[in-house]
Length: 226
Image (cartoon, helix red, strand yellow):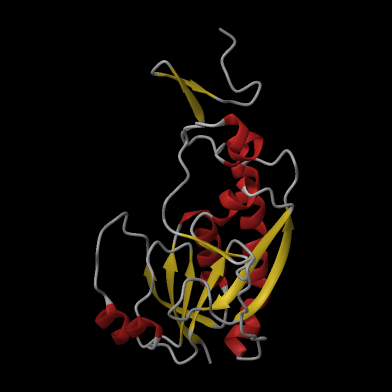
């Protein structure tokens, strides 16, 4: 029997996972909630009326309320572009580079009332190379996350997936929805890791302010010849 699924999310990882759900023979996609770009929409009643068996979240901009989490009998599942027991919250690929990590990962986990703290279904490690920019790592984690989602989806629908509680240690870091400043104010403390983490074309480039003028830090070949 097909499982009734509500999807919430967007951006590149969300779009790819949504397409997987649309193609899956055991999924009846009964709802698709996109990011609202700062808008506020109380749709708990509408979600309840859809009677989903499962809610899947991928790059959704809002924290689910306890009322929504309680609706689907099979739970709510999130794809997080980090190893959740090490990096929780927003922009984990950016912060992993800033902090000088040599590897990160992706996590498929159940949603509870915490931020990326729910029971883990599966994870994949992803290397961070010395030359990686923020965009490089985001795209590598996106590919790994979508592949993990596709490989685990059938067991989730069948109810045979693995599930283990998370643990928190002194190494566990959590970041709020505040993106690091693109202004490089201290080359000694910010340094190469900070600059490459903030490099994500076509978005604003990292820069230094000298005498009230912005000088952007770009990769060689990124500027016009003149």
